[in-house]
Image (cartoon, rainbow, N blue to C red):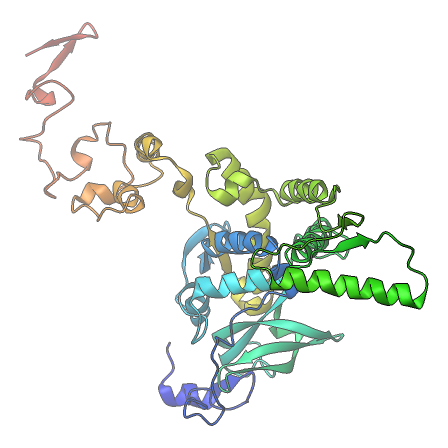
Length: 435
């Protein structure tokens, strides 16, 4: 039963300030403002300057597109129905004042890829989680763990009251700490991803040096430069060439016929690019992705392999930790759980949709209206469209007519015998019909 506003205010708890979380502070300028969104996840510099961020973003989007719901199970641990709760509202619709449910999951996955783990913290709750395990989660946010203790963690979390990030210490039993299932591939110091990042940074450094505008010339003078007088003469000659190049419109200078110039900033052959290509292909194989997955040209089989090998372990880690931390033993004994659902029809080509719809309805797996919802059509008013029936079979008088009127024995039309009632047919010889 929903609590009244007074009861909610009395029992409300906030992670930053153990008091009523409903009034808003700081909007009047007392805490200042920001020209950028302060709660947005910030990728570390080592990942931001490479192609790794695009891979992170693609995987995080695919994880966020999978629906996560608070559900009720039957006695056989099968999905029965959705639970209308504040936790379901957080992960489905609105996680906090700044993020929708999908944006929150994307934020969590991006942070987990970047740091190797992420903390999902209940911020506003009804009931004090520090004194009771029976509380409702109203809002939640993702945080970065800055210190680990035996039974608690220190988390850097965005405080929406002040518009800044703060560090708070919370017990582990109320914080969902999700570790990256691909930690050995992504976050280990000598993992494939970290080696690729270092190679890409080296390649960027070489490109910056090549485009810095320096000529890197060595001038060979026709005399030996050892004495102070010769060194001063060589320095004067160097400055003269610099002034010629700097003052010329097209960067042209002249030298003596006995002088030789060697330019050093030409690209030197090395195997750095080949190493980058090799590490990139190795990373793709270890993550279970291909170039077709990233550019959207992958076939259905490749995408199914990508979802089963890469995406589902990530979403399973998030869901399992939420079940462990956000659902009490009493709730789990009442067959409550958190489940994720992926739409299997998203990867189906249009030309195969009719055949799949026929098989699902003929085998009484989905109703006609459920199929219509998949293809974006409004439900039919026909009552048979909400029934699990095989439309290719004649079910006699057990089904309603399209108008909703159940046929009677007097006007019943039977299997392929025109308009002759069955009661007037006499079967002779097993396959003969006679009035």
